[in-house]
Length: 519
Image (cartoon, rainbow, N blue to C red; front, side, top):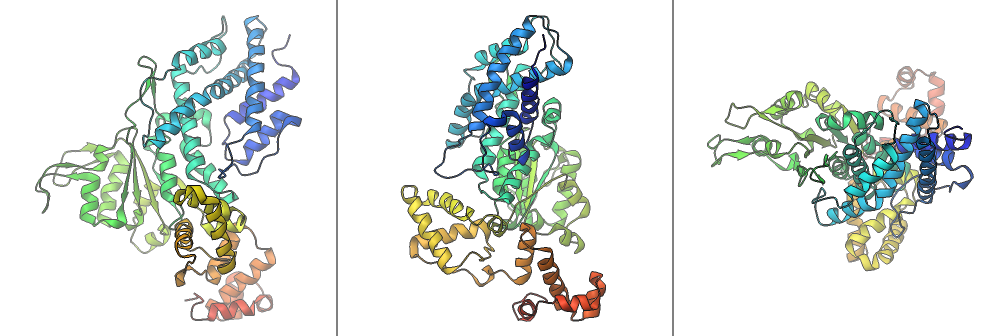
């Protein structure tokens, strides 16, 4: 008697790969389809939160139900001494992990969501369902006279489960948007938390990810702090089986410091702390945020591109050996938490200009996330605009959010149009919603209009240009700068006549206008 039938083996193999896949990647949908076959419900290619719709996942419910039935059947076979290879036992193990996660998913959910509504960042008190969970773990995974490969301790597995639940909640809740750029952002954040290999993460990297700095880049107003919160508030929290509680070292663990809002002296003091008398106004000893940050905590430094060169040197030491000194002291102190930094500046340009140290940059860029502009999101899926407006409206006027969203969308369509640049991104959209709510009007600043270069970049990023359109616009852009067919042809590696035939006269006139942006 075989452990798995051919169909069961195909199902569990797909389920095993699905259990370790990035839930926000296209791979998840393909694996669900592979596992369920004809029972698969074809979902939207983008898994995103939609206002007014429940988190309805029929494929997940079907998979969990089928997995539980199969796990019971295979357990009975294994307890009956049916021979099994190591690979079959490994598949059974992954099957049981999947069953356990979705069995206790509702209980984890009741811990995550209320805690966040109340402003907490970690669970507190005893986990009331630890003993039932431990019993189910033993029932499925501690088989008589069978040793499963790569055994995972029940407390560590529970901590991994809870981290997965936390991470999904934070990413799904904080990072909204139904476009592919928004979907890629969510997938990138998931990878920053768990890496691309969740098996390796569970084995060893869960202890190491806190030492890796995450750099978040992107235009102003695109949600870089939300990305930082999703990463910082989804860290691994150890579970203590003796006390039946999660570690309490995570409480209040996300600290934000906006570097552009402070002078270098205040930044240095806030980060590193100071000794009494170290400078005028230092009236007492003070611990900085790096010192206050607990091992499971996260320090978020916004606008890192604004950091003074002298402080870059001091922070570089923190990144290199995790030590620092208070201002006015020589005693080494240790930073134990995770560092996340963000900037809307082009750091390559800043390094070339000598304003940002290369050695500092290369300590920051081991993990990078780029947030898409609102224009990129709308270029991919303009229909996503209403959902984004609705999320904003719900924060302003929950009872009449639908009506307000319709009013704002109608105003935008009538007055700004679908090609409006949204230079201020989500932040500008928020102000537009509030302006229309109060005055039934919104007056963008002059800088809100996208120039021809910005439009080209946006359409290139969104992939909406044909090859011919791209060539015409790029030839025109370079010709507007060089004002010579020969020079343009030489730079682009094209024939002079080809360049001349590709020039878009209307675009050239716009580029040559005072506001065309070719300087």
